[in-house]
Image (cartoon, rainbow over all chains, first blue to last red):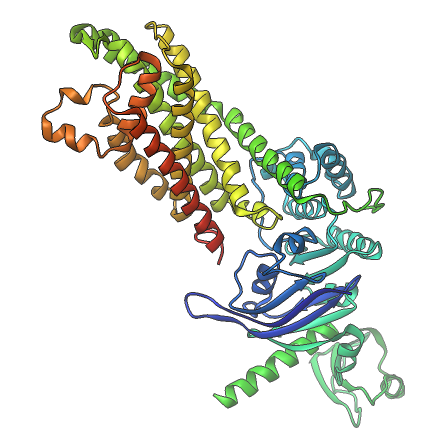
Length: 311
Length: 270
């Protein structure tokens, strides 16, 4: 079954801005899906329409088969949403925020109290339950929004930039938590600026740019489309002349560092062989940018270039 | 962040039950807000009412003598109670709903499977609660200054309830369109307060020149104050039937308008 099915979705704001220009998107039940795009591409508008915070101009959206136009309450009850911006009452106590949200979804009081405790404990916020929300750190506020979104145990969890501004330790811990939630059957849709996050967590990906879906496939196939990667090699000793590596495009960025473009057909063994022969000792190597990031930039740039050419 | 989902999925509760729980939650939250900020919600009306009773009732009222067959203090008591109910039911909803819009936590309600009429009903219940609580407190204050007879208790309850509903809806209407805090204080300051003062709280409209008396009948607050006063004193400047018809009509029309605006997403959805 499709957790989410979008057809021909458009949105034109009152100021004339066309945020969505007819997108189609399917997310399978149980999937972990990344929706990526540059700022202003239409990610948050798409999420806003799915969660009914934004009114669509045309097209259809179905959540687990419930059309948001005709069965909105049913569709809403399937969704939990973690928005990009803080949207709880900052002067309310943490426990009350989560309990109230359970009540808004029709959970009886006793169950609401149980669930709120359960998820606040899971997200390590139980000790803070009687604190005013405003007193929480940025990372805790994000976790509070996740606990609130999960309290009615939605079948589809939508997270809009959930780890923005969160330190790396908490980010990794949240990744683990999201993987487990997904493992238990919750479909997850994620937007993020951390492409490493999308590559690490998601099995499927759609890239949206200027209100259109420009790529929609499994993560493995999308990454497979990357024809070339750039590696950065660090030498133990300073190098005065760049080493000779026929067939490869290389650049010395300083006397210890070499950048080298490697296409899919070329291996890395030959590079190391030649460097060893010429007496260059490599102490470390890394991708210049994240693979997904590289692909993302190429897709967006090539679209930008073709768009500029056409206008 | 360990995840052991020990609790099962909620299933699909009946819509009516889910709505009842949703409404209870909004009302409980609104009640909690009124009590939590009692220094802003319940205390100021006590101070204001006490000053009115001291200045207009005890000091000036003694020189005025009787009005409508009652001591001036007895005459103004129902009007002052009603004035507090109007101001507070309006103020509660306008500040609570606009605050939720401003702080974006209105989204908690908008993403939940709650119909808009129920969200409106929840906020209106909060406004009515505060209006009645403040009305009760001001009534207790009035008992320190005068004896207020109650001729028709049901009329007292019906008129105060309807008035609180109408002005709670008024507050909601204001909050829907408000874009900043100035716009939630503009209407109470420049429209509501003058209308309340000119709505027969401190005087019987029969004392006014003909043209002013005629104009006063266009003020809906006059009917509310007089229906309420009739419940206490058995005396009114207006027909009770007309008064309740006006209050009922305002309540129904305003509820319909506010729910329609919510359904259209005015002020809350892009």
